[in-house]
Length: 482
Image (tube, rainbow, N blue to C red; front, side, top):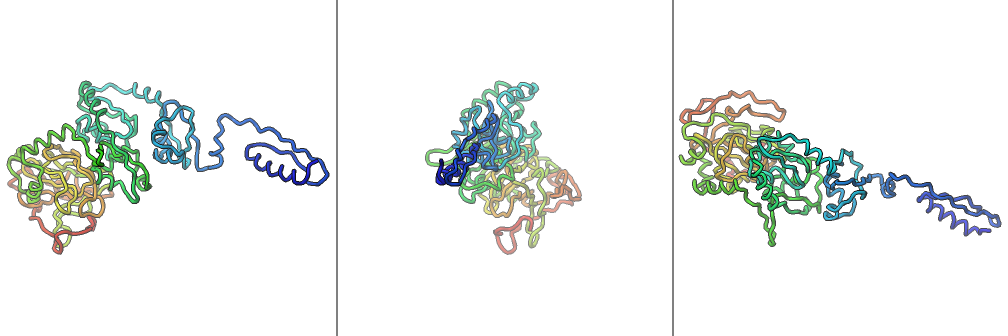
């Protein structure tokens, strides 16, 4: 005979056992009546059933790891950051690198699953790649970007992008295992380059401070925002959800014991610096001369020719849009064109020539690149997030010079583009090919001209001496779209 107290205890235990799948028989609650409690065994669990944690928390799904899968593969498949999965599973980065087959991971947010590529899948895909005659394949590793590849292989970034038909957007969305063609290399050259890559810097991990943005990282470490996005698998949407304490890989740099960060110079950069010293380029004094269109004959010869101008200019930001033109602003002082763009977009050379200056010593302009072109044109690209070229480096039409930014006196990411010739600033509008692009994608109806004779300027092109703002030499926080 069970007392009322014994039945109460039994009921309490039944509630607890039901959560584990056990069944309890009835029990009488009347004193003096017998009601033995019989427990039925739990139904056998199915092999593929999710864990109890997953059932109790519907904001997670459980992913069983297959052979050859990495944390990076899984994060890409669920369209998440590696940090999100590490945090959800209370794992360190070192633990994330030692996953094993059969291990289960919590995937937060019930994100949509794409196919996760295994090691055998990668090997099979690589074996099906067609043979190359104009270069070698490189399979992207985690933390690599186009800039680290260009550095190791000593091949211009724009050449890699062109050969692989990459846009500014797709260049920042490289994925581990992706096959890229490195053009112009033989097998022997590729082996030497891969050896340099193994010795080169893989990057450093940076812990985000409160309020720190991708722009801050690009400016601090002198690494492109697009490069950081590619190395960490970040989309433009994910940049808005960066949080304090999150770890971000800064690719291609090293840090010494004193905390000083530097980037190893590529062979191309070293050659350019030797050329700059020989020609006397790259200094602040040179930059100030060029602002007034004063170009020495030896610089023009180094750019390609002293007799004829290039004739036309390309649009400096492939998908960038026009916001301010030549002669705008109070009193018409703005003798330049402002072109806006997005994070990670590149600034390209408007014409072939030689880089005469790359730095940030011109007050108000932030990071600046100045290029001398055949015949004596000088073009300037200002407010860049980071510069990718050095003084003395030869460039072609479309060479990537920098990344769109907002350094110096600027509000919003844009390129301040100037064309200078013989002590004057000139209107580049009629020279742009295919034309002046607007955000809608349409192009302005501007009379197109070609200017090849340095001594004979077409009437459609206006030129004036550099002007200052009528009220202030340095206009603080002026919007390019104002």
